[in-house]
Length: 158
Length: 421
Image (cartoon, rainbow over all chains, first blue to last red; front, side, top):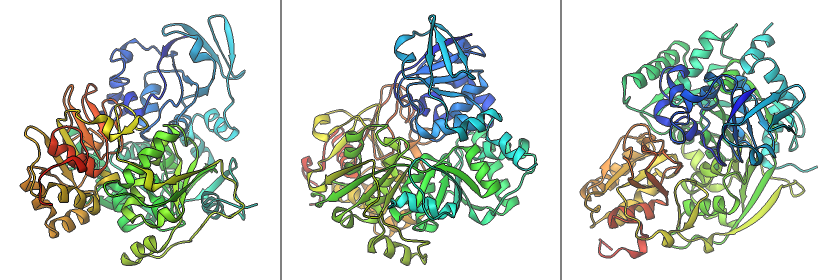
C-alpha cells in the first residue's frame, strides 16, 4: 500500500531532475531536487512504497538516467502512466524501477489516494477497483526480474 | 519482405538477413558516445557494480566534455575529473571543450550505415549521414561498453517525403518544428523518422543535422536520411568512407507516410513549455525578450552563424538584451573567425562564447532568471530548461532569433529595417 503522487501529461525529464543537478557526484546528492519545478516538497513528502501516477508520455525529453534513478533512490515503488517516452521507459527497467502502463488509472484517481500494486498479477488497485496493466515485453520483464540490467550482466558473466 | 533503412541497419548489426518492426535483436554497436551529463555515473557503476569490469573494444568509445565546460562548480569539476582520469587510464578517445558532442561526432566519426549509441537523447542527429543513432541512459551505455552489444526493438518507420524548396527566410529548423507540431511530442515515440525526396536534396548537411537532431522531440528512437552526394562530399572532405549505404525498399512497410512541401513552410516559433507547441512566428510578434541564444547541436553551425551575422551587420543588439553566440564546435568557431563573423557579432554587442552546450541545457552559461524570456535556437523549451522555472523559452531559427535580438522582441528577419543590406 502506498500513496499516489499524481502528475500531468508530458512530464519531461527536466521536470523530474533539472540539468543543474545532473553533474552532482552522486544520485544521493541529487535526489532532494526531484520534481523541484513541479512540487518542491515532493522529496520530503514521498515515502518508500509510494507511487508516481501520470498521464501520457511520462519521461519525455532528455536521456538522463538520473530521472528514474532519483525516483528509485527516494523509494518510489513504481511509476504508473498512460504511456511512457521510450528512453525513460528503458532506463527505468534497466535500473530496476518498475514502469507500468495502465490506461485507465490516471483519470480515475486523485493525488494522495492509496493504491497497491501486484506485479505478479499485473494489476493495480485503488479506490476499491482493480485495474489491469499492460505487461512488459518479455525481454524487459526478464531484466526487471533480475533486478536490472547490471545484475543481469553480472549473471551473464558466470 | 522489403525493409526500411532502420530495419536494414539493425539487420546488419544483428548479423541476420532480415529484421522487421517489432522484433527484438541483439546488435553489435559501431560506436558509443558519452558526455559529461552522465559519464561520472557510468564510471561509478563500472567501478562499483560490475563483477568483471572490462571494455569490449575501447576503439569504439568516444567521450566528450561539452555540457558544463569549462567547469562551473567544484562538483562539476569533480565529475569531469573522474571522466578525464578514466578516459586517460583506459585509452578512450577524449574531447574536452572542442564542441558539442553531436557536432564533434559528425565532424570526426559518424559514417553512413553505422549503429551508434549515445548517452544523449539528440544522438538521432547522426541520421543526417545515414547512421542509426539513438539515445540511451548510462546503464545501457555501460552494458554496451562492457559487451560491445545491446538489444534493440526494431522500430516502425514514419516516412516523410520532402518536396519543393524552402523560401527565403525559412530554414530547416522551421521545417522540423512544423513537423513536430503536426505529429506531436510523442508522435514518433518508439519509431524511426525517415526523410526522403527531392526536397531533401536541396538541403545542406547542416540543415539535415538540424532536422534529424530534433526528431527526439517527437519521441523518435532515431532519424534517418537517404545518403546522397551532399552527404558523401561531407564525408570525403573529412577522409571518411561509408560503412554501408541504405535506402528503404519499394515494398518496405511504413507506419505512416507524410508529404511535406518545403515551399509552404513559414517561420515558426515553439512557445513555452513544449517543443510541439508551435505557432507561425507572426503569432508571437511583440513578445519582449531578455536573452537570445544562437548555438547548440541543433543550430550552431557555420551556416547558422552566417545567417545571424548577415542580419546583424550594420545593426545592434537591442539595449538590455543579452545575445549569446555559441559556435557548436571549435572548427565552426575558427571558420567563423576567419570569415569575420565573430567581429560582426561582437561589433553588434553580442557575447561570443566557447563551443559548448551553453544555455540550451540550462546548467551553466547564460541561464535566465525568474520571469525572463529567452528566444533560442536550442533543442528544448521545457519549463526550467534554461534556468529559472518561471522563465519562458521560445524556440526559433537562427534568423528569427537574431532578428528578435535586434528588435528586443520576437520578430522575423523580413520585418527588420536598416542594416547593411
